[in-house]
Length: 295
Image (cartoon, rainbow, N blue to C red; front, side, top):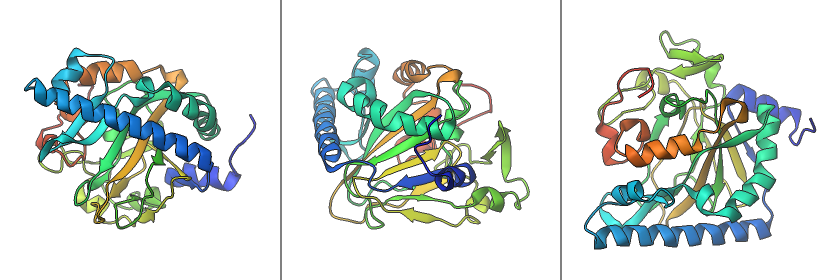
């Protein structure tokens, strides 16, 4: 297989679970990605307006229309978009860019082809959007694939001020020295003990996360961040005066099946289930995530 990445980057990804590829996208690609994001954002806004018009919720509309975006409004404003999902299926243009440019990099990292698992765009508005320390696999473990790689595409530049992603370098070495830090391993990858239920549902246990160091990953719209589903990460709230959009697209090994439709069919039917609301600053974070088997 032809390697697209340096051995140094592959080694870092294997050790820490994340890397940042600077100037990955051309300016022309950035402009196209912003056009796609804006179009999808307008569609998401229309979904919220229709939910208000029908005196229902966006979740109910999503359950009735299996081809629509799944939209989450701001807790304080039913007409303001917080995030929206199902975008790779809604946008053939975005899917084409990701297939052509990003999937080959995932294959280089994962040593096999990858397929879509889930996706979303987060619109972190001023004053909101903090995400507490967590591993994505705390939520993903309830589906068949045992490993995922996500990519973050910064539609708007991400800075410390507006709440860029943070990751923990050399986290495996740190947690190996904390008794009881690891709840379970999946193919040698550690899932850390996390909180079940309450306002911290899905968070890495505080006595573990407090021992981790954190690296701010500030990005331009030309950069691409890749991280696996076991990499601890967090982000602070947006302290700037402008909203900040980021595409977060998640993929799993093709050999473990295509779970995209399974994931979204389940989410449309069971939107309020806590497995879909792990370590998120929403009203659902107080629900209880119980047990370790599939829910």
